[in-house]
Image 1 (cartoon, rainbow, N blue to C red):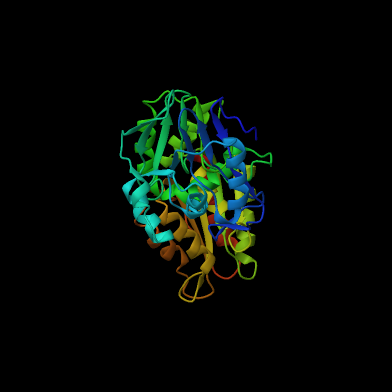
Image 2 (image 1 turned 135 degrees about the vertical axis):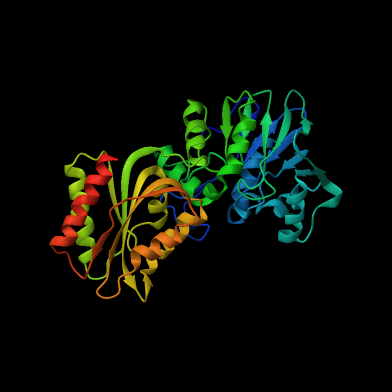
Length: 387
């Protein structure tokens, strides 16, 4: 991307095409961007660092933008290592720089680097400001979005919100791809548990005149900001984004898969607007979790396994519940050759979720499809398409 965000705000981040699993679990086929920014004013501030594996490239980017100047401040909004991993190396080069961060962030610096930079420390809280010249930064606390030390920063001169992990997405910046899909997968996977805290931050942001959003992952957002803010409002309030049905299944010998395909065919034949089928053993689990939060209806289909449910289904439901899954219609399909109890187990796992509407019809398969279970699938498809 262009190094110039505005006349004074410069981009100095890096692209990572070496990473295969972000945070050790999320598949990122198009890599990641670790974003960092510099504001050049009477005083100079560097905003966030990058993953330590890209320290040298980042320091070269910073030096090129500084063009011989020395930074007065290093602002750390979030202490996760993909953003704070290069603090120590930065301070070895720019040792006179003062570090600006929340009190909790300095505690974490000591944990990561063995020092909290006490002689260079500027602790800021909600509403504090920092004057650079014509730019004055205002700090906005954003605890648990998605770590407790997080704050975001507003530049009133250029109307820029430096949003930390908010409004970020998977994918490096040298790859063209749709924002919504990878931002949704990023949000649901990483931030999704903390919807209430995101809602609080959105309320604070509503009082600011924001023209540019600079996240720590993904592109700088400069147009149609209402679109991005609107999606964040939907996601963080756990509302349905798109009308549709996700069928998430596991199958051992193919009989459950056959039933799922029959259900999907009937739903499509009856005009359901969108039907997505995912094999939890083979498809990207994070994509399946994303779709469960995107669509209004979810069908869970699995076998009874070791007096429980198939492991991939248990993992999937765990991902949903730990992210506060709610406000959806859920239907259950179970298979078992003896003592089938998958439907009961799945329902029990979801009992702590808010505002779930369970379908009246549950499909029970005893080993393989028969006339009775086909009738149950017919009834379930009618219910899901009509409601």
